[in-house]
Image (cartoon, rainbow, N blue to C red; front, side):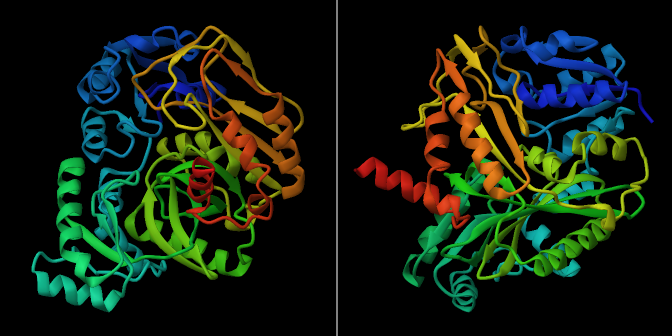
Length: 450
């Protein structure tokens, strides 16, 4: 058990974790960069410590500074949020070696699931369906690589074993392009992830991105908390999510959910996590597991009625999961719009001073944000400044509430992607729940050429 938590993150997720900790009567320590000195959550914390200049490498990615801050402030646990050091197994090891609790899975689980090749092998062992592809790293020998690729079939996609965030990926349409594409992908992977290993998978033409939220304790008990659809993406970055995923067969979803739970048991997973799948023609294909809290966790909170952040903390405290799978019920529909400080047409970041800040309200409306009128959006970090979450009894109800909330919302002084979200909720294909992972980029391409 621990009674104090250091939040090693910033922005809306730092505030979200702070609120969960305070509701649990835990002492909260916040670390921040010089750029975030005046953030609202810094004022609300029981203790706050500046750990470095604005650049993330000198502050939020500086594990030694974070551990020193924990020692100085008497923290007993560290919550990494998402991004930054949240999936860094070495940092998790350092936290535990310092006698603190890392609020997340074990470093061993993170290493297994952080390597895409090892993760697929673990998933196959647990019966989780995977995209047909190479069993291990694509060999350097040209003939062997071409033989594996021919067995998979074209088109195929090459992926970095240690990749993420859409980097280290390349589609190969025909055999004559394979070797050159493999060489470029290996070099990109080496530069981005210090790991040149790549693997090959069948390229699905029109898949949806469907994910399953899980939570597990340290005693082999786990449950899955329903599905999410995250198909609306730009450059592999999610823009809008919903729960549950529309139009997915309940029985096949339950089968995959149980396989995810079994995978958690087999790898000794602890805490919250998300299994991500491509879904096409009624079939699920595992692509990766995120071993942390997801940006889009609020839509699952809305439909399940559970506080996922508090559950994550309780699992780290060593509590047993009392929730049974039969206790989990999905009620209604929820959407989340990621509100970014960026130009809605060019997507260029738009840091600066917020002069107008009018968040929406009403039944079923939640807005998670650390920003406010007079807040200066720094240029050093991700452009996310808030998350608009709405919930309704049906998908139509939730969509109606989302439209009203987006119309009400006003942010001035900087550019935001609010106009993009207003266009999305008027899109007939989105309204029908019939979008794949290429839909938004195709729409943007048509708009830019008009």
